[in-house]
Image (cartoon, one colour):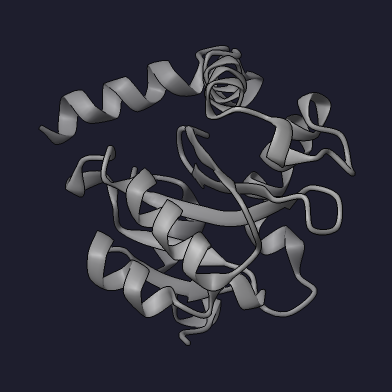
Length: 170
């Protein structure tokens, strides 16, 4: 595990694309959840349903989610210290991301992701049984959030900023 203290300083500055924060949104006990990854500069969200909170499920969905992201926009991924991230080496090997871990009990070190998970809670309140939520519903909510103008993006949407990054990366 590599500490956030060893993460390149440019990540904190949000000056480049490709630096991500990851986490989970839990449903009720034993009711599944969501894998969430948010790009720090654009606030672009990728998410997928998780049947459980196991490391294998998290790694599989993370790898699948990052396949849709151009390699040039996959530099770093900052995670918390949850057991679901214990297969981080597999995520690194299969995505090309360098994985860093935030300090314990320091949610602010992944504040973009925490904020985005709060926005997701508007659609999926605590205790949600994700076993009854379809992939299509999750994709619709992700689309809504990625197309929501943000003051911090000069009222552009995460999708618009992300598309601009893709244009420059390809």
